[in-house]
Image (cartoon, rainbow, N blue to C red; front, side):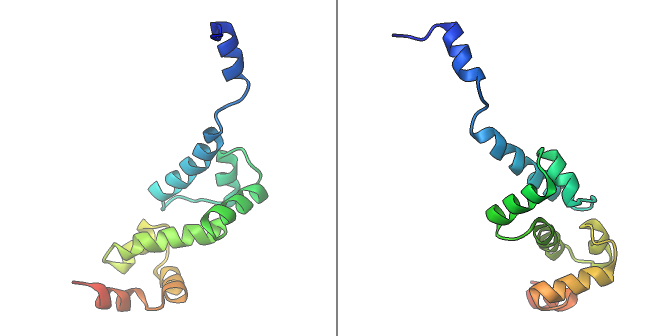
Length: 122
């Protein structure tokens, strides 16, 4: 027996698609990647997906394999690796200071930005 239009509306209006919450989470991560220079405290990211900061931290850690702050640093480092001038890189990817970029780069990737550039420049 086919559904009436009224019954169809009732069945589809009860709850959003199961993919809807996942899309919200993906959109905020895409927004962060698109604007790495921005200030991205966890509370701001959590608010964008209507979650508490703790829930946001748990979810990102489960999905990305690392806490959101570490994920953000890794995104900034990935962007930094594609650029050439270390002084401009720090500002463009949101570290703000060359010394901060160099410290994160060495601690997480091994070589300094200059060493990385020498080794991988073609």
